[in-house]
Length: 79
Length: 435
Ligand SMILES: Cc1cc2nc3c(=O)[nH]c(=O)nc-3n(C[C@H](O)[C@H](O)[C@H](O)COP(=O)(O)O)c2cc1C
Ligand code: SF4
Ligand code: SF4
Image 1: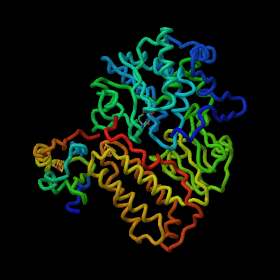
Image 2: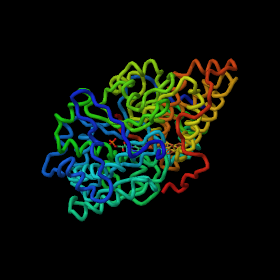
Image 3: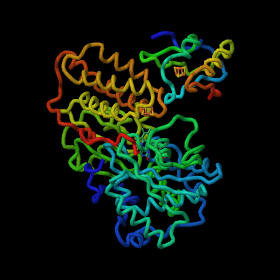
């Protein structure tokens, strides 16, 4: 399993990354772009911690959302 | 789900001084059923604030999740524009039979509830979702016609056929089917109350929940609360099977004891090992625990199980809980809609590993693999099918841990492999187009 898929601990309140599992193709472009936050399971699908994106990575998270070829990745408000 | 229960008989359980059955009081299917129904329950009330009554009654959904019904009604009512109501009679759960029994014996009570819910959210369209080929369909169609002739309902009720699949009653799958497509779950958000049937705010309510609404609107919240517990008021339909003399659907108050419920199903016919609560997305409890705690979510949830849609299966001591779980896990993997990577890949692996664990001398890493795949599929699907499957499987690993130890040592305490949990006969092809 590549990457940890765990965001650093601490109280953060920013948006979270969320996958549309029906759309996702599991090729892992998001994990390549953002290994700090996105791991991959043994079938290739992204493993993303259910935690807010830390501010210093929010720009990369936004880019992962934009680059996802299946429009399967979104940033959603926390909650 | 059809052959298990005799739909003409129902067991009832009457605590002293209380009136039961409520839902199943007056069978009124067949020609002239509407008159029988109105004689028994009284006319369909109108002009009542149904949402307030349901709120005061504390009714929760009987389709599995147990969500407060008034909150759902209020949300859809607030959405305003051209809302839709669907009665969910899909009942894809093989061990359940209560929705079929209701639709078959008291179709007008369900249709009353549908009408009241539609009124409460000012719906422009109402649907009833029922499995294709269901024995309840002819009676339902007749009941809908009879009501139309009598001018009972403000809106026409359209019956939509569900495919015979486990997932067909999941609310987003239902919405897709009622919108004219395949009964496949879709990604959320949006939730169906935001955007449902043909994009409109949609109230999806289990048919038992609707029948309860029909009673609450007539007899009021205090009457409703006279049975059940303070936090979980009312009665519920339990589909009781397994090691009992007369598997059947029983209406009982929430908080009933398991011995009383099993007694109403003809009584135990074997020593029990464990009890399955909540169906195939539910969980196992050791028999000793189950026999000692009441059937209420407040008591069950701390032990990791819940009432769900009222399925109760008593597993006899001579059966193998791991073999039972493995068979159902295979069924659940086959019933995946295979739209989401983790579910499509993970559920078959879990099912394969459970099949290994159910035989002598499984690889000693098998349980660790099952746990790893379980953590990989839980929460990673468009619908809750992987989550529910994992809940069921993990409960088996807990409750049958000793049996797994025995299997690793090449032994098994079971003396029969006769199946207890029903799964649809293999070879009956499920419709591939999900319609
Ligand atoms: C996989 C799956 C299958 C379901 N099948 C049914 C079903 O057959 N009938 C039903 O009423 N609810 C079913 N549900 C629950 C529905 O999604 C929905 O919550 C319910 O119909 C709402 O009604 P209630 O609030 O009256 O319980 C299912 C849920 C899941 C996740
Ligand atoms: S880039 Fe998009 S489609 Fe590819 S794995 Fe990530 S979420 Fe899935
Ligand atoms: S989680 Fe599984 S069952 Fe649910 S939509 Fe995805 S593939 Fe289908």
